[in-house]
Length: 214
Image (cartoon, rainbow, N blue to C red; front, side, top):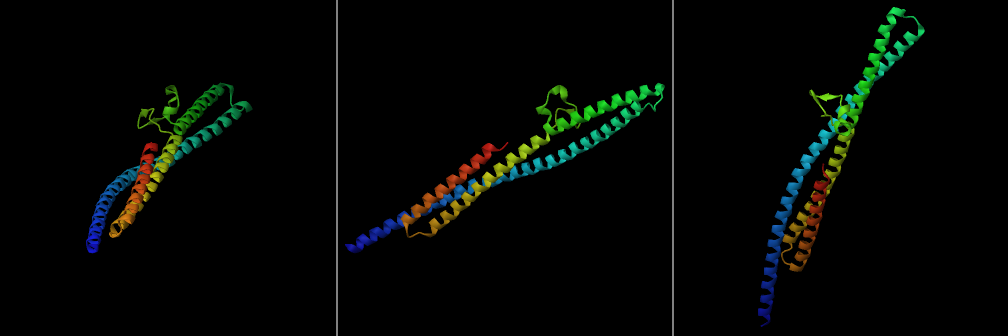
């Protein structure tokens, strides 16, 4: 009679262990799939982040070139005004200098407006203030500050995905341990709970990273 009880208990342990192994295997596959999806999305976000960083650097150089041109024209304006004030220029020639001064002021104003659009972006200024084209089209400038914000948002999102994938990996490792411990159903149950917990945390991080992405 005692042997029968022992045999029955052994069978129950075996069945419980098999169920735990089956559940653990399914959960491992599930969280591995979620991790693969997270890696795919994270890879795309990292690529977008690099594009945003490169655009920010490129537009910063563009902005600097406009600043240099503006500075040169400001120096030219100072020279022309000084030339006119000294009286060196003959009176009949002064109208030419005056016109040149007016043209130079317009160029300085134009460069300053272009700098503003390159810095802030076309969408951040009034349509009437659009002065800088991109491939022949007006209103298409994404400003330096806009690229900076995009890069920061993608950076934060990718970090959340990194945390998510870390917890997915921990969940899968815990699941593997759960399968290995086949002779202790209670301990297996504990590891299954831990696996679900870590997988849930990984899912939360991944979903949060996706929601805060641009």
